[in-house]
Image 1 (cartoon, helix red, strand yellow):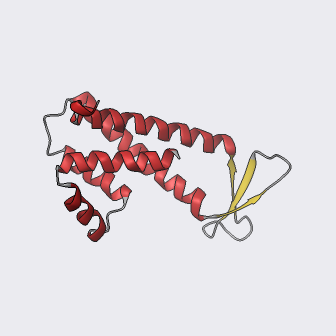
Image 2 (cartoon, rainbow, N blue to C red; image 1 turned 90 degrees about the vertical axis):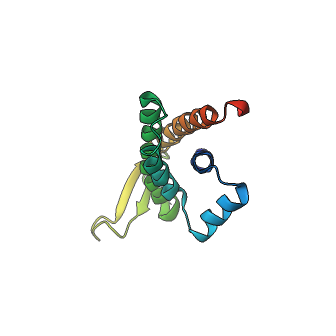
Length: 140
């Protein structure tokens, strides 16, 4: 759920940065085949063109977008790889990976690491939401 919320927050910030009508934004996303990580990169580049944002807010936004990028990669690992229980402890799972050598084709993941990633995504959403409301004070 946190990842879905973070994607929505990134889309909302980009939508407000571009100030396009909603239908035009939808066309840009669909036919430009923009994925949400691409949108985060666009926002970072647009931010360079928008000097009106105070330095602290810019740093917070860049932190959130960079964190989103790294957590997106982690999320893709968790979502798209093969999972299976491993060992006696319920807190451990393994992911069969084509990138690891055949003698140890597994990556071992602790569920606490998953919970930490989810918590970090919630922090990303909070920063992006605040930036969105700063762009749209009438929405707060």
